[in-house]
Length: 210
Image 1 (cartoon, one colour):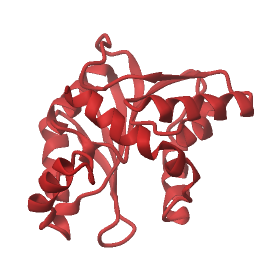
Image 2: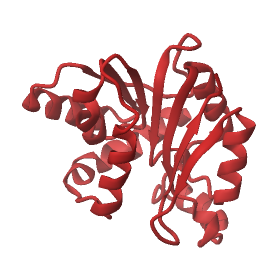
Image 3: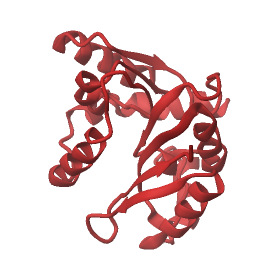
């Protein structure tokens, strides 16, 4: 069984329940939206990978020209498309796709969003490097990442077992320092790094130099 199919099936099983769950920290989520919105312009082309059921893409849609939003769960994408249709939002394209194999010409996007996704990837560095190539000079990579290695390092040992038992998805148990090094290794300059509290997701605004 290939990796993408396995991950897709895991998230397909959770899609309906995931779509009904409230945001864990609404205040932090709204703060991240405000920061992101401060960079948006009407002519911008965005990519969001790991879009889930599309809530964030739909919030930002009215501020940009177009958002291409992808997720490797077919059921997540179906729910996102339903939300877009219900809201009458036509400038977001939802697709089932994997960022690792997505074919995108260099310097295509003004901004890439990777929210609650980098810690779920098999090779985050390859994806960070790929995002850098996708972005135009001066473009932004905005991410929010669970850095479990900071507070729950034991997951390095539990995550493989949980995945084997189909109780957990793929997990990269990274620290904030490791994530930061990965961004810098990918050629990014970190303009903002914010964590609302210890153990919360790390929100980063990273810029590709001009």
